[in-house]
Amino acid sequence: MTDAKKSIHGEWSSRSAFILAATGSAVGLGNIWKFPYITGENGGGAFVIVYLLCVALIGIPIMIAETMLGRRGRENPVHTMQVLSKEAEADKRWHYLGWLGMTGGLLILSYYSVIAGWASAYVFKAFFGSFFGADVTAIETLFRDFIGSPMQLIFWHTLFMMATMLIVARGVDNGLEKSVRILMPSLFILLTLLVMYAMTTSGYFQGIHFLFNLDFNKLTGNSLLIAMGQAFFSLGLGMGCVMVYGAYLPKNISIAKASIVIATVDSLVALLAGIIIFPIVFTHELNPSSGPGLIFETLPIAFGSMTGGWLFGVLFFVILVFAALSSAIALIEPTVCWLVESKGVTRERACLQSGLVTWVLGFGTIFSFNLWSDVKFFGLTFFEVLDYLTANIMLPIGGLAIAVFAGWMMKQQHSRQELDMPDPQHYQIWLFLIKYIAPAAVFLVFLHVMGAL
Ligand code: PFF
Image 1: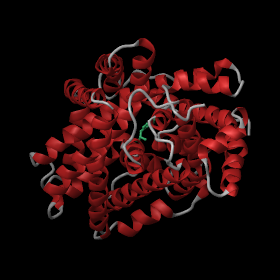
Image 2: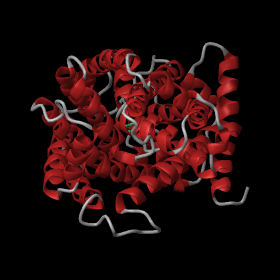
Image 3: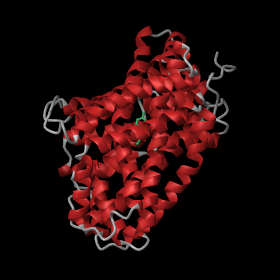
């Protein structure tokens, strides 16, 4: 049915372009900022193993499914689900999955942009030598003063949102594709150099021990949910982002192979970030469970005292901002795609409208760190509520729905045709994972957290 159909937004020019863009969406603050601090808060090694298991058994099969749905539907997530549920003769309400994704994407972007704003500010702090010779207390004070200032956070959040809107307005091939071609390889080179630095620190082995030591006693039910949520967050699943990227994917590209490459690179970047950060944490006797400020309070110490630290510092934060940008454009793309396709507005206007909504929402996160730091809902700040709601609830529900649709609703002849795996056994493995393992795992983790297990 969809063979001749192409997305009106254009297509990726090649397999590598798609892999780069999807890796760009996957690799971001989730890997470098979030993975280390939640690993720190959840006790280290055992959490990392659960996280990697979630990536392999739940994340990869769902990534394959989400890309496949996107490519078959070729439109924004809402329309794609409408088209596909009709084809599958399933309930029309499946299109709500598209709405869930688009809403979640904008909610995530609203706080993602604030944190990316911190990284942008740190590029300048690094450039003007703020870390030079600074000790632990000075770096902590620098960070606290910074997040305590709403005006500064608003400034950087605004700048980051404007950059995101500008790139997205330029379209699939010009905006998205070009930016990731340079960013991803540079990120890898820099991370490797920083790993080499971490190996020279006195806390290296302690850091590695923390990251890979399996102490399951430290793992709570909530840690399981957080590990699973992080797998979804880091791979960028369940929000329709992978679905729209799939909609721009030419027919002849193997979705399964591409998904495995993307998930592997994504996990590698997260592990590399951990291998860099924890040795520095232990060398300077810092607290690994200090929360969202972790990388901003640890890495500057290293940059301030190592040879070449000025250059490394500037480059690191520049690359972090770019990695965040390539994820931010993925977060906003489903809504932009929907506005263009169903409301008939221009791409520029669609970016402006969705960007404005996100920008305003971002103020809630900004104030969570200063003016509203005492305003709590169920003991959590606005930012923490948003993060918990999106990563631990909306993304897994979105992922669960994708798994159920692809595994149970869609006709097997269609998924088999779309995935076109050369070895029929590979298709059977995927089908088993998507039908039984992924939905059961998500469901069990939810039950466990609700105290029913
Ligand atoms: N995967 C991105 C990261 O790890 O930073 C963030 C993200 C992108 C989350 C796209 C969700 C999403 F749909």
